[in-house]
Image 1 (tube, one colour):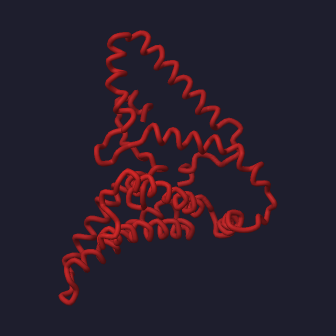
Image 2: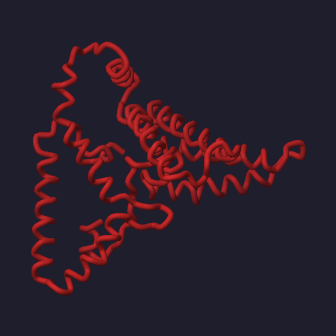
Length: 248
């Protein structure tokens, strides 16, 4: 997006602090927002409106509306999943996330889950969503059911390849910590449409720039250069596959 701004183009943001999603629905709004928004506007909403025209008389409007939304949500989830590739692992990945989001919405409709939870409940939901997000990511990342089986056996049973967990996992701990740190600093509030921490720094930073312009630009330039070096170091000697979206 920064490179596009050099050419006067404003690209829409695509990820909003995905690691801090507090549920399946919130995750769908934060992850791959451009694709999710397109599917919502051109698949989900039109399908809901079209199906509501064929409501049977023996079903109440509320129940039929819920069934329509569940079915439309399923269709949208499958389109999002199969957009990444016509493979069974993507289908399973989309199905799992659809089940999570659907159960969450049904509990809200029944009044068993608060629509506007407290801060403590949001923190609990975020911590509960993280392992779900990581586990479904295994389905997303694997390229075949055989590799998926090996991953799951390594996670929940004896490791058939006898790979040392410490030897494999230690080098990526700092990457995970860095990812959470960046997502935390860039935490985005979907309701207010503002970056919580960055918006608070915007005012003081603007006043500082007006008072000490040369010093501010020097510090900002040095910080940007440091981030570029850090990004290059992040990818240096990386034996992992390339950027995952190059596969699609």
